Image (cartoon, rainbow, N blue to C red; front, side, top):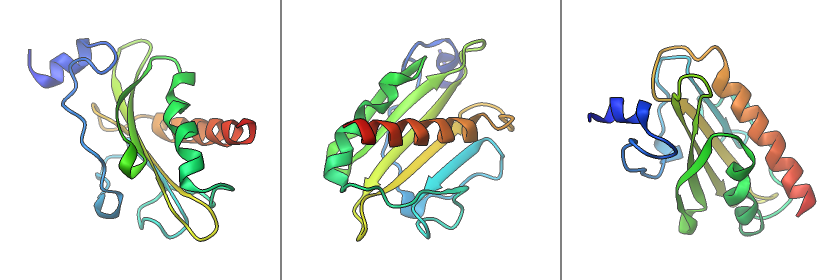
Length: 149
């Protein structure tokens, strides 16, 4: 089964190519409107959403971020890289099983940790705003989880 077809019929991370870390400093967003990138202020020239510094350092925020995907339906952790405080998940759509990839990374900052959060569709051109809504949902859930920690 080819990778694209396998990705449609897989469950969780099944059928997806092996995960590789996202290099946010070199990330170039595609011309399609099916992505959303949140970044610290000034952290990326193509960011759609600016994320203020977190009220904690990256080491404190990492376990909270690492568990964040557990609270969302049809979402599976693909891989994490603790040494760079980055993790990736796949969230599959309820109706068609389309996989979208979510990558998050914490970076140290002078006023608290910075957060990069990137959601992208693997299929199609437009997502009708699904990735932006997902990023906003994840940001709200992360903020609430940090308050509860």
